[in-house]
Structure formats: structure tokens, C-alpha cells
Image (cartoon, rainbow, N blue to C red):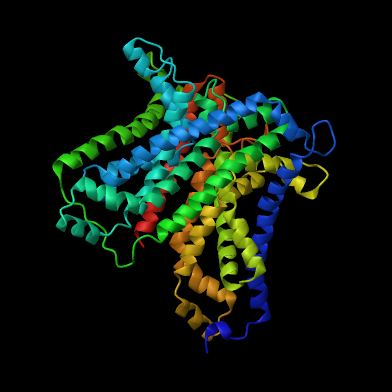
Length: 545
């Protein structure tokens, strides 16, 4: 008799229902309700009444259309540059014997350790009016605007494009190249006829991921955007600057449309890519060719070296007395003298730990409940779990303001608390966590669960003795992922902070806005050190398994 058909005790049934019901209820309340709230708020006119007045006002707001045009132009330009650089890097890492692959891997991880605005900050230190390059050349370059934003977004999006393209290149089959060589095809002919068709869906997927990242990025835009407004900064100006909440909600929905469309097409492309190549395919093994390997090594040094240069410059500048005029070392910039000092950093740590612990527990329960209780509730949970990835952080944060900044409703008590910040960060990255935990859960041997149930163990024993030990590494990786993203996220929480509750990434932005760029670099360095330590601990913990 299969263990799945053994009669279930009432306590086990309730535990199973709780595993699905509690996370689903939280998903409805902290993602579904806010998203409905921003749609409803876009219909509430600032002068009173319900209607399409905010949408009509959008037509008379040329700044929004200019920002939309700038966002689309920037997104298209960044996508083209990143695809070219990303493909060269991914091909070099997967199909050549170029040296320095570990150097490249570390460099590609650096943007993940820092708030997105750190890249813009580093470019200002290097190429700004008072940057080191301008001082050396005796000129005052202007990096603010389109070109500076393009450079910052390229460095920010490049690692994610390389990740997708490397996965696509691994689907290749060495036997196709051997057959082509026997037929006398040149390396270029093999590249055009075999390699490019094999990675077309990977290229498409990477293109839409990069485009989405670019048009929804807020950190770089606010630091280095200058007089080049984009949709993300336009929402911030409408809500925080002009207090036009209704128009801000409409602009948020405008931003949601291209982001959601991009994510939908990216998912289709990723699914097609997964179907490319047979299971029996033999991955190509790169052969040493000095001329080719040297060319890819030079390209890698140029692109990855730029990431190192920008991030290391921020760290170095935090120890320089007056960048770039007095280059003697000092720790004075670490004496943060704005109100609150390092309190926002410790708030970030607390919020991130809360997001990681609470989020991992909810994801584990939800994935287990969906797997064991198929039905309408599980289908609804799967649908809602797939949607957060299409919602930009700025839009989700604004939706939280509309939903939870209410004194006359019970959930209004959450507004201004660390718990709400943690929940916002968690649901911002809910989709990635759910996919990871669900995938890990499918690898747990069913025989272990059957044996536990045959021996009299209920649902609680199955969870404690089978799933938790088997998924320890996956759950740890998801917890660290949620912690890292929560530490560096700016856009999702920019509308949720209060005078008494701020976080590290927002403090970096405030310091930069106030002209304390060296102190902003020092604060950024502290954030990167904390996140880097967590990443190193994860690496050490998972290496033992």
C-alpha cells in the first residue's frame, strides 16, 4: 500500500491545510490586496470622486511622456550593449580556455552585493566633474544624464545577462560541431549555423530581463540621471515631490505594463530554451586556441575590469580625505554625522533577517502545501506566486503606501514598522524564492516520505525528518538570497520609510543628495561588507554538502 493512500489523521489534515492556507492568506493580503489597491487609487481623483480623471491628467503631463520615451530609449540602448558584452563574456567562460575565469565570476557577483546606486556613485568618482579621470586629464567631464545612466545600467544588468546566456550555451551538443567539422564547415560557419540558433531563446530571455531591469531601476537614475528623467524618478517626483498620489498611481501602472509584458515574454523564451537540446547531448569541451583565448581574455578584462574599477573606487574613496585632491587615508567619513548615524544600517540588518526568516518559512510551507494539496487553492497560490516578479519594486512600495497607510483599518497598524518593510522586500522577491524551493522539493525522494508514513509518522514527522534535512542547503540559499536582496533594495522601500525608521540603502541616497558623497561611499562599503560576509558564509556552508 502506498503511503500516500494511508488514512490521514485529523491533526495531519489540519497541519497540511495550514501549510497551504497561511502562506496563501499572507500572499493575498501582502501582494494581492496592495496590487488591487494601486489600481483603485488610480481611479480616486486627488480633488475627490472616482473616475478616469487621473488617466486624463496623464495626457496633459508632458513630463511623464518624456520620461516614458527616455525609459524606452535607455532600456533599448542598454539591452543592445549588454547583449553584445554578455554574449562575449558567456561564450568566453563556456566555450574557450581563457584564463581568469574565477576573476570574472567574482567580478560578476559584485553588483549583487551593493545597492544599485553604488555603480552610479562609483562612476561619479571616476568620471564626474571632480572625478579622478578628469583631474588626471585636466578637464571636467559631465557623466550625468543618458551616457552615465547607460554605463551604470550596463554594469548593473551585465551579470544577470551572462548568467542566462551561460545556461543557454550549456545546452549545446558537441556531436553537431564534430559533424560540421567533418563536412568542412569553418568555425564562423559553425557559429552562425549551430551556436546562434541554439542560444536564440537565451538571447531573447536575456534581452527582456535586461530591458525590465533598466526601465524599473531607481537607484542609478536618482544618483547619475541628472536632467534625464525616467519613469522611476517620475513616480518618485509625483508622489514625494508634488504629492500627486493619484497621478503617481497611474504612472506606476504605466511602468507596470512594459515590465509585465517583458517578464511574460521572458518566461516564454526561458521555457523554449529549456526544451532545446536532448538529454543525451554532450556539452562541447573547449579546446585551447591561444589567439582566440587571448582575444576573449582581453574583452573580459575590459568589461569585468570596469565593474571592479567602479566598485573598488567607491571603497577606496571612502578612505580618502578629499577625493580626488587630498589622497591621504582617513576614517573620518565613517563617522556618519547625519541624524541616526548607523541606526539605518542595523535596521536594514534586522529587516533583512526578518525577511529571510519569515520568507523562507512561508515559502517552505507554501511549496509543501501546493505539492500535497492540489486543487483550486493550490492553483491560485501558484498563479499569485508567479506574479511578483513582474511588479517593479517602486510600484509595489507605492501600493503598500496606499494599502497600509490607513488609520481607520486594522492593518494600518503595520505602517511604519520593520515588519512591513520585511514583508515588502520578501514579496518583491517572492517568485524567485518560490521557484527555487519548489524545484528543491521535487528532488526529495518519495521513498523517504513513504517509509516515514508507513512507520507511523504523520505530516509533522515527514516535514521534520524528511523535507527539512533534505532541503537544508536549498532553504539556506533562499534565506541568504532574501537577506542579500533585502539589504541592498532601495526602490521597494523608498516610500515606506519614516523619520524614525530608515534603512541603509535609503541613507546612502540621502547622503549623496546632500552632497556627502564620501560618507555615502563609506555607508555603501559597510553594506557591501555585511552582504559579502553572508555570501562567503553561504559558500562555506554549502561547500560541505
